[in-house]
Length: 277
Image 1 (cartoon, one colour):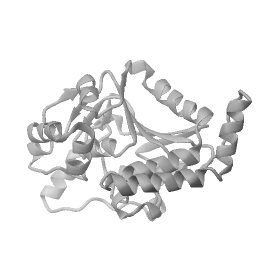
Image 2 (cartoon, one colour):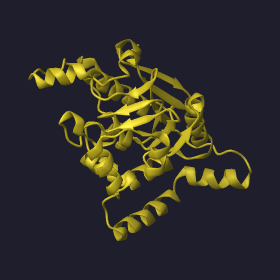
Image 3 (tube, one colour):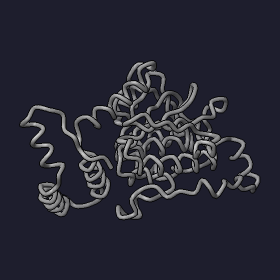
Image 4 (cartoon, helix red, strand yellow):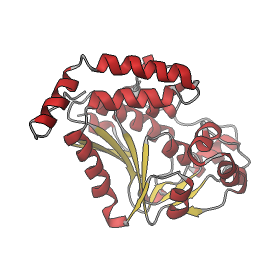
């Protein structure tokens, strides 16, 4: 069983949701190389599992992720390297055809052809901020608190933060939360655009699972994958070529079984039966 490989995450599939829980609660799920490798391995499994329509990432206990483990950072400051992870955890999730820009250390989440949703249950600090930002959607508990914290550690805008954050919250807000490293709550994160929805803490997982279940009932997984690629690939593209490509993709969609099923299910007043990926 692949689950036996995991020491720092939990992986559970309940059709149509794969839930990945960062599982170092005593350390507020502080990040390690092993945790990153386990997450990547689990994402690769979910990506090819037809039972999975959407992937949810959350944290065990009070925190989502407190950023890099301070013991690891202390070692790096002394010139020490991180402990190597087992070769069995090597994985390469994401669609290489979507381009190298979407294949970074954590931005690979943006090339996984299924919705990846962060269910933010508590504190998000440091490098956890760009990981959350690289997810497609972010639902937050009312107890969630965020801080970039990079400037307080003598660091920089890590792991693509300088690209991701301005696109979610705007340049001024991005510079504010990067410069000041201040803490801000879930409601402010929602006002900025960093999170999509704030929900009562006890309802976070059920709400997030319900969102994926709604996608599974009503939406074509193929359409979701193509739209995800369109949005991320075209973020830096001119309008003209983006519009032209969207028309070509629309024409191609007319020839797919999902289009026929979508029309027939509407006319017959029944739920659609789309092919899973």
